[in-house]
Length: 221
Length: 71
Image (tube, rainbow over all chains, first blue to last red; front, top):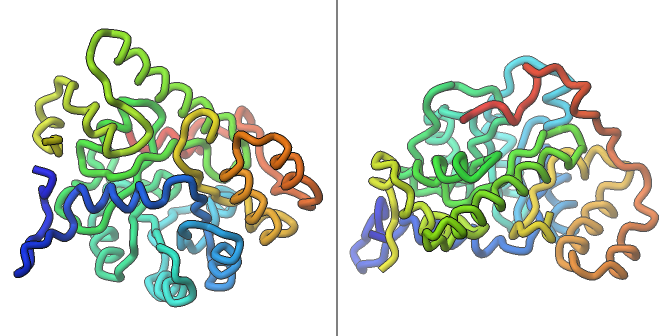
């Protein structure tokens, strides 16, 4: 099951499985991922020791200031940033905008952020992330939201915070809430292996009772 | 955030909206690595220039809050 949605090539190796997707998230542990809007920014971020960059047209503070609809960045910009650095490049697509995600995958980005910073394209459905070979990161405010995203195939979870404010108070609230829900679960007698990583959260997911979600669960053998 | 239990940090506007992005970016990387060493944090927090201006969250109209998007 760990190979779910992966593709087996002639040599029997699997690409794009959940294990591989979460594996990249594990490789970024302990690091900083920086929003950049130009190739020069990307090089500064890389020189400063960023473990990855997020290629954007506008940083969240400007998106907030300018208003209007915020969309996926111009593919040319993303390509120029990918050409400028050797570290992984992430890019954002709108919530529920699976075609933007398909485009980003075709461009060869290393991670897709299905992000609330951009204007949502679908208020009901997030992207079904399992069929993609590229991994997704999604935001959450609590454990329930994190697990819904993992059920849809997200391989990394971040707290949402309130982007573009320079104010950490919401990120702290979301982290505290998520952690306390994890603790509550483990105290309630369910054996919870929930932790910060998507992989172990996915394991935690298996003890939830929503059948629609557990269908997508990668199980540990 | 690292002490609260995260595995890593996303930084949005904070770096390139600051006065000296390279210096601030390096400081954030060092602070993430040495999150449990206050003496190192004191060292890397010094002399970074102006930070991004920032916003009080209660001052933002409810319908402009980004975190409420998605469910």
